[in-house]
Length: 266
Length: 276
Image (tube, rainbow over all chains, first blue to last red; front, side, top):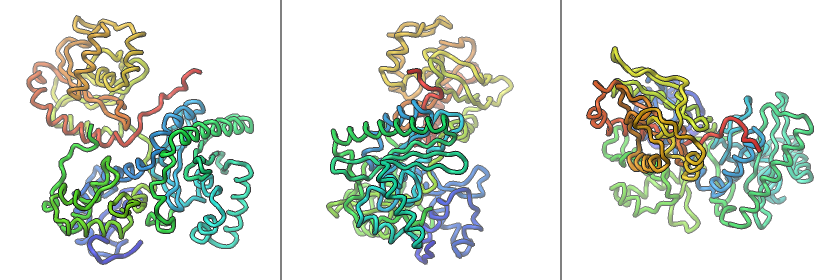
């Protein structure tokens, strides 16, 4: 967290801490920012009046206010695919019972831009707005893997980590390109499958994923899920061909290195 | 319906550092439906000098909350905003989201406040707070009422897309509960238009006709359909139609806040698969 002396800087530092989740007391905020209690009070009062901080029901601890959620949603609305893909997401989730997520690229990050919640008793929570480096989610890797070599090298310089991790990422990318999709299975049995959404020029700035928290049907179920996401992805790609403005990347005019969300994610 | 009905707050009224308050006020303008804003238009809307507005925009750009658009002359939301949503918005839990607002409605009206959601061709009450008096309306937990009868149902029905209302009216038998129940498609359509125009549904004894007066507001989803409805109702000799009329502006204000919150969430999927 950047420690800033200016009043505005303090406001954004507090906002950054609050967006880490949970409700935080004024004392803890003051400690973590190394500012006097009176400063923390003033900063929180400013944020609360502007709707960016809110007190919990007991009135003692602070959390992110509605204004912050509204800004996140306003940012997500800038992706034309969000609204256009929603019916496809809902149909796919209706047919499979699982949570479906549209991930869009902002610089080197993937943002969960649209989702449809699964109806299975146990299903993945479709947390809209969640942001992480491309390599850290199935949806993000389905985008990253279809970047060209120069872009990939640029990403690895920024987010690759050590030589071992970089090599593993490269191997993963090669496998995804060959397979055409990302398949993530974790130890708890959760299974995520993600496919790239290609625009007319073959560029990939978005992906479609099915996230099964308690997948059914073993290997056959898995094949079925892959086939279903594929046909839904093709449906969205057809929409993008018919209406090229849907593929628009609202941040495409800016260099990806300049697009940092102000946290390291993970 | 506008995304936020609150008036633009005056930056001079803020406590603490005014320059900081101005920065946040400028940032808030980007939460609306317009993606990009220019300096002159913002300074006009916010009643700030161009110089102040320009400084606030530059500060927000420095912190990554705003970026220049492709023409380099206007500003748009930037990736810095992502840190606010980095954990993501959890899925909707309607009773939990509505509860603080329902408590305020109950404190204001002192009457029973209940929350209903749509289930197929009915509305079901799933939560509520009983009114304060010795005599009060019961919270009808679990009661399913067809979509054409009762304010709670009509407030949900009116916000369905026209073709879904059409489909409901074409197949449902519009059961008569009382002499005033709307039992023809024409009468239901007229009521739908009235509810849409007013923003709420009023009781007229069409479901329970003895001694209760009520008003129901939709709880809206992002697409403008209703997640459900909130009803405020009580005994007619205390919660008279006049008293109800008097309270509408304040009830409406609380419901606007609830809707500002609930509209962040898309409409929920039906909880069971639709048969192929």
